[in-house]
Image (cartoon, rainbow, N blue to C red; front, side, top):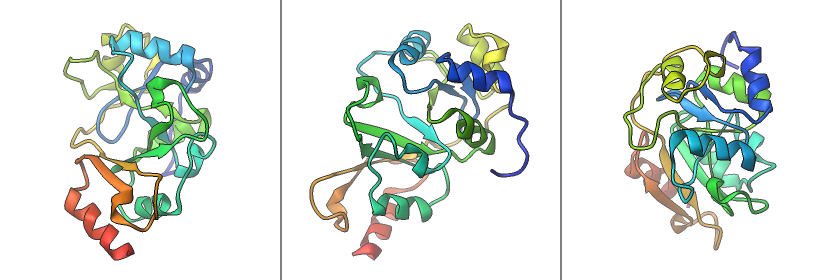
Amino acid sequence: MDGAVDLPIDLVERALQGLPIVYPTSTLPALGCIPRSDALDQIFELKKRDGTKVVSLGVCNIEQAGDLVEIPKQAREILDNFPPGSLTLILPAIRTLDVRLGGNSVAVRVLADARARELVSKTGPLTATSANISGHEPVNDCEEAAAILNLPTVAAFPGKCVGGSPSTLIRWNVSGDASQDENWTIIREGKVLKEEIQAWLMQQT
């Protein structure tokens, strides 16, 4: 991990119990829970989020997602070639998961914030949806975000986030040769521009 992180032990225990927590990412506070259906029930209720909308998972490294998703060789390569946290990859699930996690296709982001990576290294993958009521403007302070969601102080990792563009969202298309451009679909342009992704892909052919 990047330097010493004062990790609140109560926060780790709370997450492992399936309870919701708020933690910092490189952009905004995230509302996290372990990828279990009863835990997802709670964060969707807190956010007042439509159950048809999926949430991504934050991990400390791509290998941590290996029990949940298939990790093509090129997925590791693309993550190595762009800044940490700048890409979210939608990868095929090893087994069908809760539909709120995407079912057969799960969005995974390697977290850039050292505090977040230290946290998920202890808890395992956590949801990384923004910590705000759906449709409401998010705040950048984790404890303030928790209070807005009526969560106790113990549910928040103290600290603020710097904001900025979201990660670029890319879907891995499982049919065909992984070396071909059409095997990646850019769903949302963010920190990494579409042209940068396309230029990198061209170098791989």
